[in-house]
Length: 158
Length: 188
Image (tube, rainbow over all chains, first blue to last red):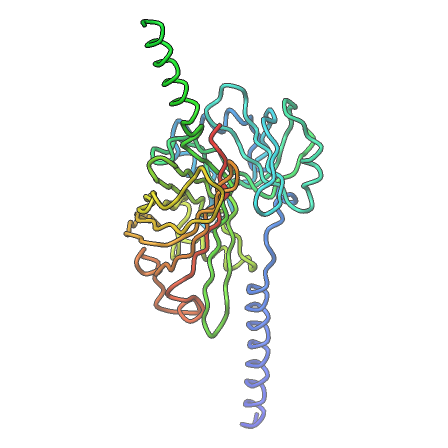
């Protein structure tokens, strides 16, 4: 084997590696966001159960539900619709909370799913699937209870 | 005579209570915070519409509680980096918080429609590190709705968010611009 041929092979191999590596970097850079509704549900539970877990130990609940890279657990939460509002981003926000409870589960819908939230009515029992962003708890400075926050929500069939 | 004294007291009480502001604590659960980072390499924006905030019109106290995982980026990878251990470590520190007071409260008339300049002094806690903050903002009163807007610069290294190597060190600005917009309603 002559030197030229070896050089050619090495160059080809290098070019191929560069192409694959470059493609991978490009893929990572443009990686789409996770489709929460297409993701498997991690936990199915009642809104009051989720709130109780957080009020008991926020640390333990965060350990269980939050993900280090923000791809936290996908939950299907069943509860009573307490209010339906619009946020500053023009998304529907459905609060699942039973009368007399300190905190509820706030579910923010998306452009694709807002119309489903609009069909709900206060008092109705419903199951909503979404990704958890933060937990419930009493905040001394706010002097009020914060709700569990779910986003990328949609109404699902039980 | 006794009757007129009684009437006077009753009238006084009526005047006092009827003119007392109805709500002193204003609340929002969907304030908007965005941040913007500019470098030669790229501009990065993230939005968070899930900020909980209270504003006490009597004491001037303002509080913001920011669920960190609700920041959304255009690129999924950036969002992952932001949440990750090397950056904001949002699993260990799921919330950032600001507590402060409007220092020129007398210049803001919550009972009269209008836009007022306000100065706020307080403390910002990000990733477990607390630093003092002094900022200016505007308070707009319209009926019983109050809107607060402000912009502040946050030096990431102040809060232990540092990156010496790799792409983030060239593509993320050392100082990010944070914009805040909160529309409050009376509590209840």
